[in-house]
Length: 352
Image (tube, rainbow, N blue to C red; front, side):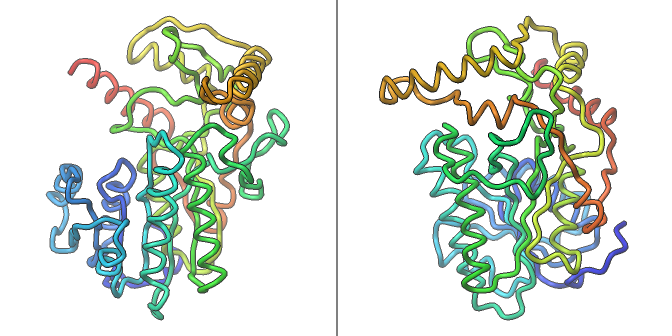
């Protein structure tokens, strides 16, 4: 249990958005494990509540209030956020294909929930869950350090990835409300969160788009965070005193290379054919794809660009020193155990 001082008591009201999600359900479970007794979860009317119901079967269900609503409606945001002391904001657009939908479900929803607490004078902290995808990695040299001082993408639309665009705009919304309305905030940026509930291999290892798996990561480190470790980092970042306006990257202490992760996946889940493309080859292909997309005026979507190559496959080093030193976090699940649980889940999926 973390021994640092917290900004709220265990009876103070806490709101979680995105509580039914892969990470959000673990955040709920972690808060309950820490003894919090006044947790509110904003859930969509169409949400699958199975994960939450399973958690409530092991803890005091009276400590959790499920509030039906959507972040796209201000009245429902205000109802959910009324009187809360801390908000854990995990809801965001994922898997979006269009930039408009990514903006709507990440930036607009974030604006609405922020707007709902600007007049709450007792509000303590807005914890925004962001992503490594917001970082501009083009100017980082290969094997260079990606940490919290790295700049965000200035033109995220050039990544060719709607999710990146939405997350950048989401973070910018948090900065805007902090500046204009003095909303106290902390932003956490997880790398690759894995574990039971998350399907398949991360795209940082490679892609299977073209009928055969192209291994693009090579000897790159993969910035993994086991889902329970990530949830604990998120919870503590919302509670610990003295870290307002902080940004923290979330990665575990032990990070495998892409090559090792791919080999372990094949050995423990199922073996499939893959071809390794050296970095200069994958970069060249992304360059040609990008140029042809420009020449064809978007008839070929800009799915593979040099910006995306730099973000996913160039190769960087990663640090969690700031999270250790300021938040007092440490991963409870080591790499071997995390991968064992993850592979078991993947095998179960293949059998079903």
